Structure formats: structure tokens, C-alpha cells
Image (cartoon, rainbow, N blue to C red):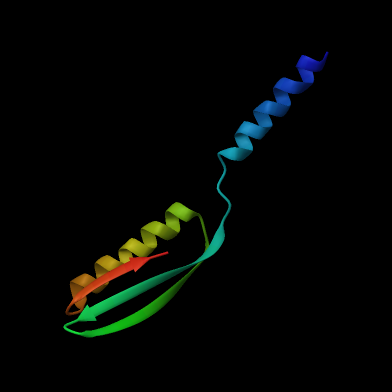
Length: 75
């Protein structure tokens, strides 16, 4: 009788561990031109970690394609 209860409980626990909670993240980008640096932040709201990381990487790519110097971004 206990096995019939334990197996569904473990299945629910396993399922819950694979779901991603959506949170608010801040992507911080630093651009360095010669000896001058500039820091910008971008809020990424209601996103999973992977979605926020991808969006932050997109900010970095866009900045490196449009701004002089080098830009690095991180969550």
C-alpha cells in the first residue's frame, strides 16, 4: 500500500525538479574603449535562467556589432 503512494509522490517530485521558475534578472554590460569603460544594465523580467542568459548574450553581440571597443555582458 505504501508503494502505491510513494511512486506517484516521487514522480511529482521529479517532474517539479525539471520545471524552471521565471524570475527577474539583471544583465550587466561593460564596454571598454581604450582606457574608458561604461557600464549599462538591462532588466530581463519574468524569464527562465536560460532565456535570460540568451537575451544577455544578445545584448553583448549587439553591442559588439554596433559600438567601438569591446563589450562583455553577464547576469
